[in-house]
Length: 233
Ligand SMILES: N[C@@H]1[C@@H](O)[C@H](O)[C@@H](COP(=O)(O)O)O[C@@H]1O
Image (cartoon, rainbow, N blue to C red):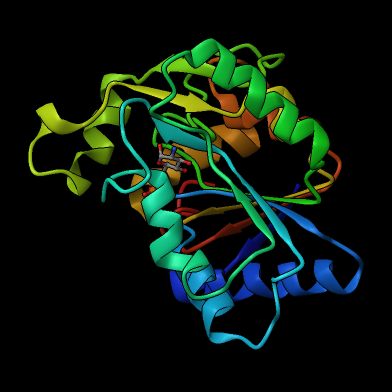
C-alpha cells in the first residue's frame, strides 16, 4: 500500500481530490463513495472545483436501516448535502434503508455494483478497523448485507444524533468482496482515534478481525494519513 502523510484533513482531502482528478483524466467513470467526517474535505474540494461530474456515476458504501433518504441522519441526505446537490452526477446510488425486503435490497444493490464496476473507491476507517459498515468478523467474501452495528461503531457515530438511542443499530453495507473489486482504492484516516486501526491495517496480519487489513491484498491502494492517524506507525 502506498502511504501518504499529510499535515491535516484539509491537505488530505486535497490530495485525495487530486488522485480522483488524475483518475478521471485516465478514464475513471464510476466512484465508490463514503460518508463520515473523513471524506468531507475531499467533497469540499470536489464542489469548489470546475470538474464536471455530470457524466459520472457514484455508488455509495452503506446506509442505515430504517432511515429514509430525507432523514437528516441518513447517508443519502449526507451525500446530497455535501456533494450531489452542488455537483450533479449522471446517477448516484445509495442503498435504500427503508426497503421492506432487506434481502431483496441487498441483491438489488449487488446488481447495481455489477452493472457499475467501481474505478475508484473512497474509504474511511472505523476505530475498530471497519470499512463501509463491515464490522470485525465479517467474511472477506461478503457481498452487500445487513449488519448489526457494534457498540464501538454506535458510540463513535452517536455524535451525529441527539441521543444514543436514536442511532440505528443496523445498516446495509457493500461487502468486502465488492470493495476489493474496485480498480483503485483511496483510504483516508485523520485523528488520534484512528491511530490503532491504521497501525493494524498496515502492519498487522491480514485478518477478518480487522476488516481494513484485507487492503494489504489489493494491488492499488493509496492511504492518506494525517500526523495523528500515523502517530503509531
Ligand atoms: N460507515 C461509516 C464508514 O464508512 C466511516 O469510514 C466510519 C468512520 O467515520 P468518520 O469518518 O466520521 O470517522 O463511519 C461510519 O461507520
